[in-house]
Length: 123
Image (tube, rainbow, N blue to C red; front, side, top):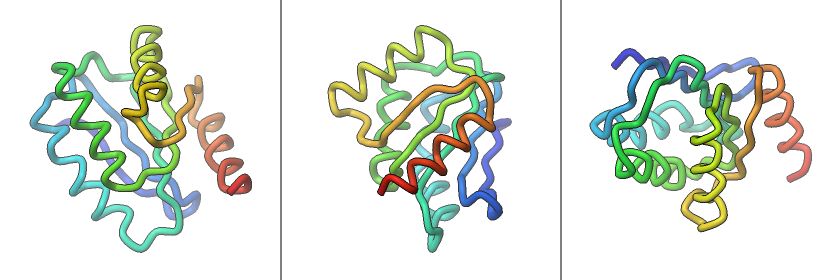
């Protein structure tokens, strides 16, 4: 797996950088990754950086990844580098209720981080 995953203790935000293609097998491991990284953490917020990502293997891959977000009780997801097609898919999933976390799209990591921190103040 060439993707990068890390928790930033300074901002209390989990980061997920997708590099290249994202396969179903990788999506199946997300739940364990989230639980291990977020155990005992004060917030369940994620920045998903897709600027170096190319494509998801299938619709099933996307479904598994979204279920992992829900199962880990992720509250907010900030996407960076999302194509128009991916943005449309995420919006449809949100409307259908398949993605429970509040999500939005940003051009930079700083914009995404500001949004996530502001979301904490609203709760």
